[in-house]
Image (cartoon, rainbow, N blue to C red; front, side):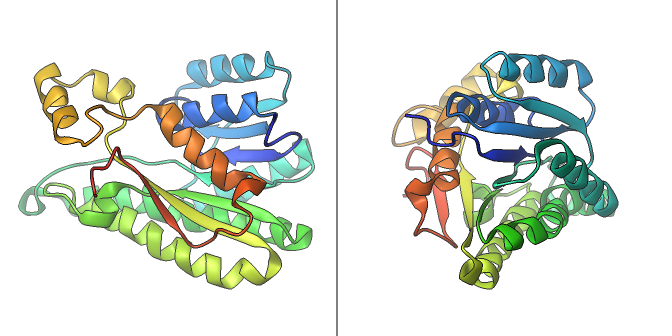
Length: 248
């Protein structure tokens, strides 16, 4: 059963990692996908071809969601190409970790801009379409760090906690128009980025998690699938921790 048959989905930051995992699972469920990438044109094209080969329509756009005008232009381009948008997944994100005493203003501002302001930019750009349709699902990627904090990540934690506050407020504003807004807080998800880390460090993280493993991008994608589909028709304003029990 394809849960997203014929739906149009926007995913920001999808050329690798969690975003790519979401795109792959959504394509299997019949969604047409418009996604953004920042610089990796080669992997974006490879993903576009991979998704199109499954029989759905997919297109990658080089666009910076943290830039207000670029976000608007991207949404306009997607509407022109796909006709409408049913689901928005705000997934674009970066880290610039450091202890507060060593963190530069630039590193603080950049993380807030990419991780939090992009969510405002994209939601603002898509809102009119969803209001007109009187339907829509917005899914914002937060983090367990946004829920509980983490030393050396004041900028990242602040941005991801901000995403939760934004999510809850949008859910209250748009609920009467049948537009839902939820957040997902992934824990330790194993991606290309974590593969570069020391294996002992990674194993230490796995051992500290109740389920004794890191999450996969598919684990996060399946949670997104629930929020994007009609299975969660009566769920809005929620934060779902996908963390193997880390915050239990």
